[in-house]
Image (cartoon, rainbow, N blue to C red; front, side):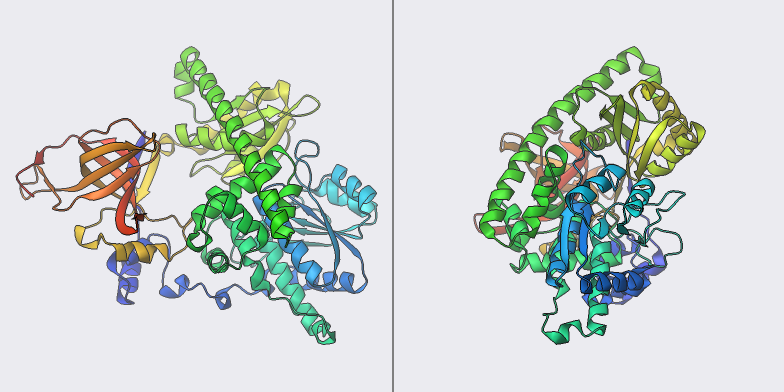
Amino acid sequence: MSKITPRPYDPETFKTLSGSGLLPVLARIYAARGIENTGQLETELTNLIPFQQLKNVPETAVMLADAIAARKRLLIVADYDSDGATACAVGLRILRKLDATVDYLVPNRFEFGYGLTPEIVQLAYETKRPDLLITVDNGIASVEGVAAANRLGMQVIVTDHHLPGDTLPAAQAIINPNQPGCPFPSKSIAGVGVIFYLMLALRAELRQRGFFSTGAQEPNLAHFLDLVALGTVADVVKLDNNNRILVQQGLQRIRKGRACAGINALLKVSRRDSRQISTYELGFMLGPRLNAAGRLDDMSLGIECLTTDDETVAANIAKQLDELNRQRREIESTMQESALAKLESELKTRQTEIQSAYSICLFDRDWHQGVIGILASRIKDKYHRPTIIFASGNNGEIKGSGRSINGFHLRDALDIVSKRCPDLILKFGGHAAAAGLTIRADAFDEFCRAFEQAAQGLLSPVDLTRIIETDGDLPLSEINLALVESLDRQVWGQGFPQPTFNARFYVESQRIVGEKHLKLKLRKLDFSNDSQSLRKSPDSYDGILFFHSDPLPDIIDAVYRLQVNEYNGKTSLQFQLEHWFHADKPVNDDAH
């Protein structure tokens, strides 16, 4: 069940924004996203939060500067997703420009699992012999791994953004905005943002030491914001003010043709124009291709793509990543069909129980570990329930990947389960919207019951109704290309959603294009003066409904977003329908 509701906003904030010169529709949109003044929309680098506000950053910069001066061997230990890969690339590229002796290691998710485990520490010690380990996008939960490194005489710097557990690792330094006592206001910064901030502090420390006055070239760290933007968007972190600056600056570099060879190559295999790139391309084109390496193969492939300056090498790797992404989509499609069939089968045998459930947990020994997170997201979206999908692991264990709905903090829920049933979850981690865990295969049914109990305690029946928030109705006078162009100049994403609107439409015509999409002619409907019938707008609008080929009824309620449609050199405004529903209201055909 779904419900359309307008995004709430503070009327006083709306007045303030309108009074500053913003169009009323833009003032309403920004007020609904927590913008209180137009200064929060500025995306110049000078508006970034100073690195000094990140706990332990200045001291860690001193430690790194000392290590570079002493020619110590540094090793970056990365996570195997897009955030981890971009964070690793940022660290490698900048440290190498600062004359550091640095290499990297990324765990194969199927052999070692997530984070700085004791096994990864041992592998690093045997193959790389580093003096100092630097984790990126992981490490805050690696209590045992850091202890193992300490025993082997390796120092550890943890850079992470995930929520910490009850015990912090005994690292030489921890940089994480979510650790206790950290005043950094952007708690949603991605792992790539954290390492970028550490590099800002390191450059400042080296400046103070006169490092660049001896002939070493000082790097312009803005050159690496293309990578920061990609990792930030692909990791689906909240685009707060600080993250929007990082992303906007990175997008500007890519649009001006200043991206690294790897990002340009990924854009080429995605058939996307760098001059027109937005957060959509970062999140839904580049991110999945990069993630495919970590899901099906080895994220070293993705990191090599992002760290090479050789365009030919980058192009070859991008082609491999594109092929891996095709394989990932095929596996995901097969698994999704299997999961939905399994769920439908359970609905038939346990209909009342399943339909009244507050959560969904599914396991199949044939499912692929690298794709269960995507599958959990798909099932969550379809049924609007916190969902955890499990696949077979090693030694009688199964690994789960979960995705959550609004109002249900997934990591906190797993923490509740672990405290109620201390031996049930072997390990877990994550944040509000996504989390991972490991349990014994024979404990699956017990976990399902415990997780459902936690869900029922944290959710109400109202929470199980999908709420589709929009920015309300748009008067005909405000629907124009100028508004679309104003919206396109802003960075939209997680926590700062792209504006959508809702209205009732008369479907004037419809035809299938590309075998699976509906091309529409729409007339907006408004109540006529008698408030009993609906009046059609004088103008019709182009519309598109992707991945839907069945005919629509004559009258629909729809949620849409505005976009520019370019065809045969002509530019026009188009409504892209995101959701539609049946609507049965009389139409006054005489009122045009």
